[in-house]
Length: 176
Ligand SMILES: [Zn+2]
Image (tube, rainbow, N blue to C red):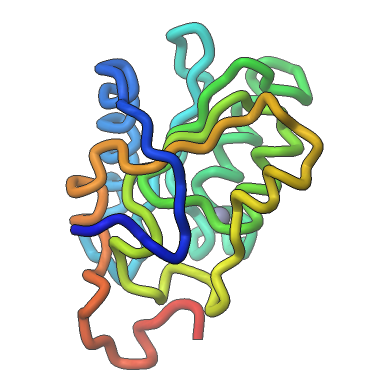
């Protein structure tokens, strides 16, 4: 799979630890089942080698349109630490965070966001129609201490979702 040309995200060599935590995020995503129609996303927040939260998206279960995996993980991590800020923590997500989750990452003060599959690796149904440039959010957030890196276990993460070229009936497309 090729890197997204229209949405360049720096790809940095991932460490073994990054892959370990991403594998956990994949397991969390799979706990939702293997149907790509259910948008199985997993997010794990790690600080100093300890897991603060590991959540899957729960939009339909709750129901709550804001209950994306990353949002749920940020909520649980803050509840667990009793702190509003997650400075120094890394947020792992199986899929490139949407605009809402990127903004939540900025507000939560995590130091690093690492995602697996990027927007170009999966079907467009998982993203806003006009995909928001999340790097632009970060650039304009007056934070020079937040890093977003994509492509950690990209292919494994992409298998959780519909392929970019899959021909899906409209009623399967979550964002329509
Ligand atoms: Zn999101």
